[in-house]
Image 1 (cartoon, chains in turn red, green):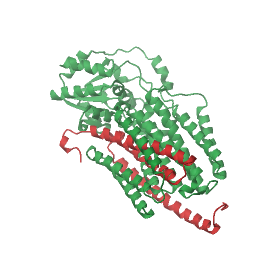
Image 2 (tube, helix red, strand yellow):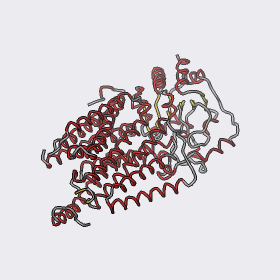
Image 3 (tube, chains in turn purple, yellow):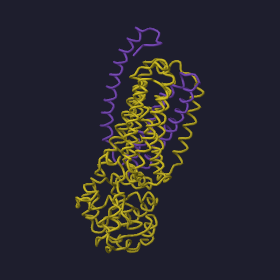
Image 4 (spheres, helix red, strand yellow):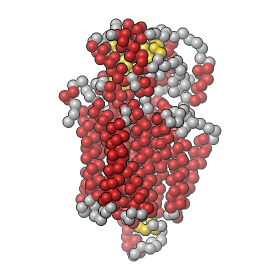
Length: 118
Length: 462
């Protein structure tokens, strides 16, 4: 890759090396998180598989973080507008996903009602 | 907020998400789990907004407010019966948001520290492409799943000759456009790639029939996670990578459990068209005698039993019969009958669908049992009451190696002393095969809408 338009070619070389180690760290984190997910989700009781889907859907809207940075740091041009749409979509998911999960979980009651709830 | 503090906040959010999922191990801890998930999301958003040089707060809060209100409105209004399509619709939003964030990274890479437009590292472009492709497939696939579940298009598998070749060709074109995009960094190729992935999502979900929806919806759940992870790689954001990986593996496990519940491979499901080649079975089916009964007959039987197991299926959801069934549960409980529910993993249109509906009606979760925990009890059960289920009770899956559902785990209702089968007609189930159970001497068929039949039984019991 030609380091075009970058202020300082030496800086670019350094940042490429940095990027490689960054990538290794990211893959490490990714693989470990997959393992954590694997072991945690196998412990979920099958009765709660619907709430599991709803809550994972809600937390996957963490993508909102990318959209927030996009809108927060860019001019209100094309990127800003795209970012705003992304925030709206993710926000629908966040509030909708967590609320519907809560609604579902409220319904799961045992015989001994006192034992339910924190 | 310093970058270090932001990183710590992201770590806290990741940990809260993990705790949120582990809370679902039991209904007792589940609600606390959900609250921890909410806390994690709030921490992540606040930490991001407090990072240095964030501006445009009015736009950000406006967008959050608009989206948040829409989500709240939908979540409070939706009926539990429509849950599967709601989840599908939500998945599509995550997919689309992923594509949009990738588009921002393409047009304004400097925002994420990826360099200038047109001069972004190939590795970043590859990561961007992965997030976009998976996001676009999640989006369009979920939209199709939604329209099928909502009944906007028929739940029947849509098949045409050469379909698999077309899909293969499309997959290759996606890879081709991705290669072009990574080499040139030009936005046209980005959108061609996204468009092709979008089409691919549509085409791959269309051939899949309604009863395979539990697999499809779990798979799209998984995809939405991988899309978030892909974007996390693009933006070098650890929180997105971790959260996406958690969601991705969760959805993958659910897909695996659903496939196992049908004794089919993911590939089988994706190739679609299950049950469509079984049409001939219904044609050459001889007229065999069945025992049709009335609600009064059923009530008479239920008046003299010690134990009942109810097997609900999608028909219960369609007829909104869960509240009537809870009434029946109360009445039989009052008569000291041991009544429990047996849930097949793929009953309904999404994982855990039946459990939610029964919980909605107020059935205590202790009396709702999974296949493995109740299957050996059928032989000691007086009456099995099958409501709107079919293939998941078919004993042929255990006995006939030539059957298309052979090897699929089924609920052994045939081992109980009597079977009450509430069904609209003798039509075969999703697999397109006849249910051996209909013709047994100890089976009584109760024809009609599930809710109406249960209501009639209740009247006769009173």
